[in-house]
Length: 243
Image (tube, rainbow, N blue to C red; front, side, top):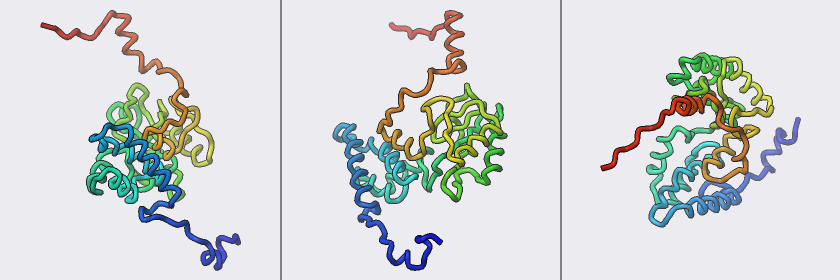
């Protein structure tokens, strides 16, 4: 039996102190420093525009937009909690309960569905035992049925923590999840050379660079096909008539 499981361990283990915000003092200090940096990006009178990156920031700390994250954003911008919640519930990238370390989104909209997205979703849902917007008990994997990944040229597409995995099949998508569960490195089709966690990418979305923007290759041929055909045929966009 480990020490943590002994009857006396609970009496002697001191809980980490928290501030009135609900965050540990060191965490809150870093969070407020980052919030100040985000606010500084916006001119006076337009501070409210900082709300979306702030929500990504608190999500990078908690793994979702927690009530304490809502509160600190509201306080920092002079907004009500309901005003902040209205934004957090509108945008689908903000989670309202803990996401997995690896948040797996399967596109089942239009082209992806035609190309097999529904089968991919069925396979990963059955394999994990999770439904839409559910997280595994160990916190490793969460699933989301996504309306569009904006990557139709590589359909069907799966995203993990908003990184692309193109041209998926039911078997390849299940293999990605199994490898993530085993703690193996998984390389997105496009983007960074190793897959960031959900919290790490949330911080990037908050506007804090991770030094990996140069990783990944050039646009693939499917993305450039239309441009190539247009150039071969001398097609150009119509010019706006001027009077």
